Image 1 (cartoon, one colour):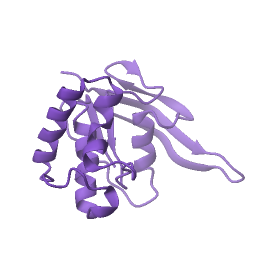
Image 2 (image 1 turned 135 degrees about the horizontal axis):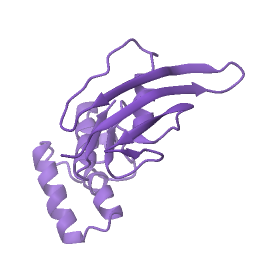
Image 3 (image 1 turned 45 degrees about the vertical axis):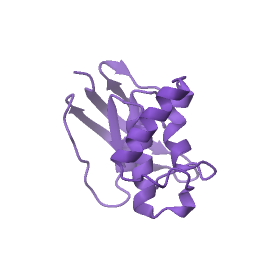
Image 4 (image 1 turned 90 degrees about the vertical axis):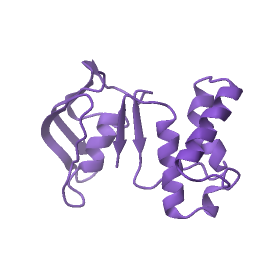
Amino acid sequence: MQGYISVKNLTVVYGGKKPIVAVKNLSFEVEAGEFVSIVGPSGCGKSTTLNAIAGFIKPTDGEIFLDGKSITSPGPDIGVVFQNYELFPWKTVFQNIEFGPKMNGTKKDMRRKLVEEYIQQIRLKGFESNFPFELSAGMAQRVALARVLINNPTVILLD
């Protein structure tokens, strides 16, 4: 089973006039198939840690591995659902969910079938043509989740 994450001595410092140490010397492992929560007060580095695992930010020090391979940039094996759902405001529910498979070259017929299945699963049938501003926050978050799940990533990070 794939999905083993290893974080070794992760340190992330945000630069500027007064550098901020967001994460310092953090190490942990997550076994494949394991569900782990990172809990702590606001500003303690939870999102920074997830962003480093996702490859969105480079560690100041330390290393992060997925299945023994160093994570140096974002990739298709790691899906992220952000705190703010981050949907494309100019795309419909259908188009937002379809985005990943379309970018990956999935044929149109297969994309349509997959998107329709996910729309059914997230209980948004009838909202396929709606834009994000026409959805409740909960509905938009479900679209964001479907947009990640449809790509079948090895690891899903929920911020």
